[in-house]
Length: 157
Image (tube, rainbow, N blue to C red; front, side):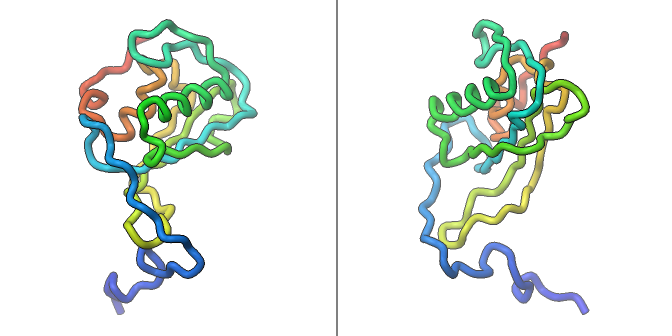
């Protein structure tokens, strides 16, 4: 017998027991589309480097996994989107060859009351493909849904 969504256990409204009330995240900068929350995963143990600019128009830099993580964190702080982007260390896929590799899971922004869920509404992996981006900032831009990123093309090697 089918159950309605309202009668289903779990989900966003399931339980707030033991959780602190959360505040609404800061608004996204202009030019950003649908509000989203990103979780970016980078494996610090992957060997290898990628050469690309951190920001569009910047000089290309040689980045290993820890430098990619550091540069992405700095971009998030500089753009004041800390409430919308978080980081974790873990397997991003592609362990068989040299990285660095990045995995991005896309979530809805948390509801005002309950603890945010961990159900992704989308994801994108950058396994062996970071070098094809025009800059590292594209990882954040195209997953937050900025209009500029949607019209931007990847560079051709």
